[in-house]
Length: 196
Image (cartoon, rainbow, N blue to C red; front, side):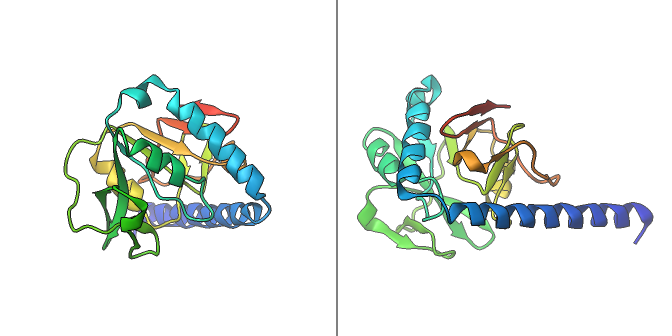
């Protein structure tokens, strides 16, 4: 291993340790958020998104079916699936595939325990917008995920608008980034809109 490679490896290890510390801090904060605050912040975030002219004009939106520790999306997915094509991510091996949401009844638990549409048909068409969760975001639009890299690999192949959504406490002044991390174009919280 040459000196340059060793330094790069050492830097990467430091970044990964810092990321893990943030994941643990955010996880602790999530334990203290009340059901009322969860609902209130979610409503504010998605009201702001719904008022965006871009969102109103987009036909096909990749969203996510929220888990217990994410900004809730179940109602917004169901609402907009009546007038737009709403896609949900499905984990297939190391990659994300996209599947069309049709109803809550046809969701099943996927590879990582996340609910996804129960269909063998992967969506291959145009995606106008991605609305993506994260563990944390920063003021420059950087995103910290769970560490598996699914979204970053997916984003690296597609040049589409990426909007991050989060609770207020998930927006930090700065987060550590690796060279493969993909920035968001906008980040929405209940009290802030970051555009990068």
